[in-house]
Amino acid sequence: MNNKIINFLKKYILNKYVILIIFGVLWLLFFDSYSMMDRLEYGQKCIHLKEEIKHYKNEIKQSQRKMNELESNKDGLERFAREQYLMKREEEDIFIFEEK
Image (cartoon, rainbow, N blue to C red; front, top):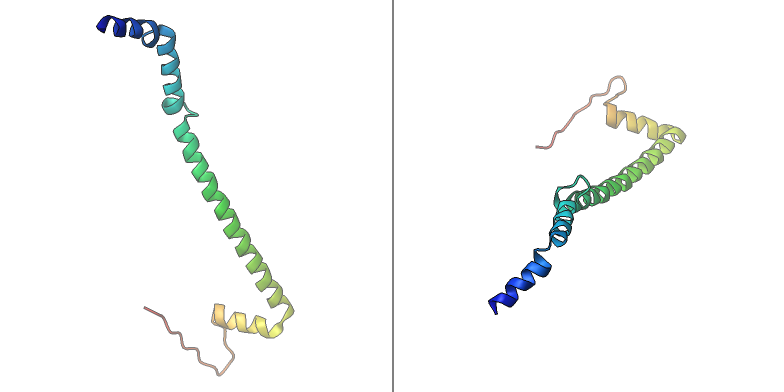
């Protein structure tokens, strides 16, 4: 029985080509500069960056909508300036409330 196992190991498992192939596969999976671990990490990074692109495209659309509104509406421009830049008319006081 032991002899059959040893012969099997010598013939198939401990063959220099099999060892070389196993070493090559392990090298490609874990240690190479294009390893599977790096590829998985880059895939996750790519997904995250695509989500960021969607987010910033939505922000651009909202900013363009606000800009068009401000350019077309004089009252809206005045309201925006008062709220964002704390501008005021003469004889007018501004009170700022900060939330804690």
